[in-house]
Length: 175
Image (tube, rainbow, N blue to C red):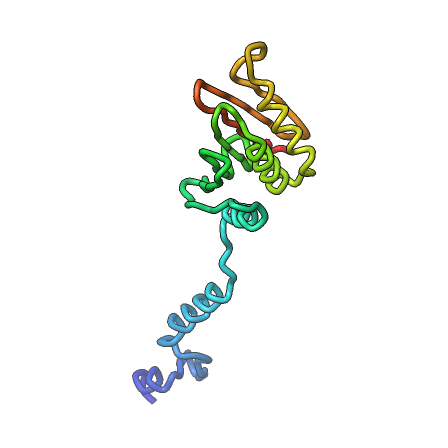
């Protein structure tokens, strides 16, 4: 048997012994790609944690809707707030909630921010409402227009100008 006939038959001759190759080389690459494709196709698609939290908020709070996501920030809408957003994975924090309303705040805004804070940071709703209202109500003539405080392992920053008041609630990465 000559060398070409051996290769055509799938037999590799080394010295005096003959060995049959266990597989055909032409089909190994497509088979490997097929196995790899099925492995990735069978893996469940995992959404971003921020989007999961936003969907959970929309399901739990009446009137809250998920608007769109861009650059690790999910923008939300609610009738009680002018602006509402949920940020994920910043330099110093893991999750951040930002809410903005008129300078004259309504009880619906306190309830919205408290409910969202309770769901995002897994704290009791009463504590969340107490902390956010405490921060927002401290702004004034005596303490100024920029309040930074810490309540129940949450960092709260409240600011106001002539027309708007806003609150940013975040938890540090190490907590």
